[in-house]
Image (cartoon, rainbow, N blue to C red; front, side, top):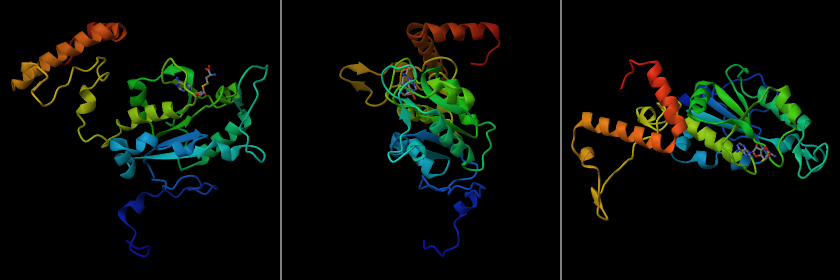
Length: 277
Ligand code: SAH
């Protein structure tokens, strides 16, 4: 289609913002009004969308079901080398991301798009944060978007975390070299919960964690492989029996592998007894 053709339908979603900054300064995608947005402040904007550009999340990105707005922290750096970090106050190894520089990036991020701060969590990826889980993914998917700050080196000056009231979120009890992989993991878990991203809606209702249990084992063809058969009930065609078997497996696996999840599940099921399923 040439430039002079009638604007296609999708132009109707291009947002007209009041921002003084050129909207597409750092992204080659136009802002889609109303689309769930991940704004990511990082020293490595080229690492995005990364793995999120593939498969379901990638197709959803292409279809405008969500959008990604990576913001290059380096642009807000100081001096000829656009420095963003300095040595830790009080001494010690490594470097710390400067509060003033991150502050400028956060102020810039807040002016992006037409969104107000309401229902828009601001997250600092950090091993000291609350552990990310499925319920947090669900909460983020119900927001209008999220701003994520990826740390590097020894992390971020505490004052910027406090001043902006950032929520610290961890991917798990280990230390990564930067927040980018954590951000992508959390965004993957969140984006797949957005409406229309997964073809089969039911699949997010039955999977692990959706009702506090781990998922039952899965099998597919061939019916027999290296002498191992598929559990016969799955080939029986009895939907009731299959559902019962899967439920038992789910419960057994959860009890065995994750006593913490199992205890919480049992506590919930005894407190609100008449429960479906
Ligand atoms: N000195 C810090 C670790 C810094 S690691 C400490 O001991 O707590 C550098 C950056 O990687 C962090 O600022 C954070 O953004 C990211 N990161 C590292 N581990 C992470 C984790 N488990 N979850 C989320 N982000 C993490």
